[in-house]
Length: 61
Image (cartoon, rainbow, N blue to C red; front, side):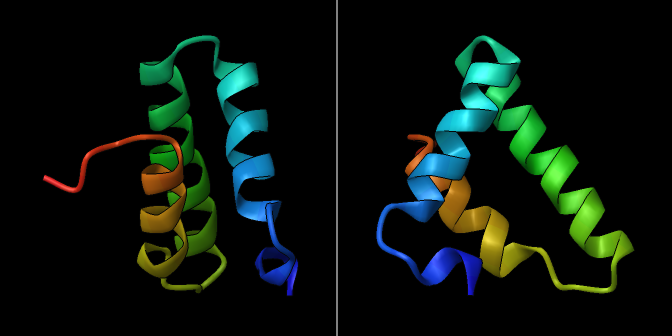
C-alpha cells in the first residue's frame, strides 16, 4: 500500500540519500538497512529493494 502511490518510492529513496550523505552511503543504507529489516520481519526484500536501488540510479549490471 505504501509504494502504490505515484512518487512514493522516489520519496523514500530521496530521504535515504539525504540521510546517508552521498550516493554510496545511500545505496548501502537501502541495501543493508531496508533489506535486513525486511528479511528480519519475514518479508522477501528483493522485490522492494531492487526497485529502490534502480530509482536511486544504480545500474542493473
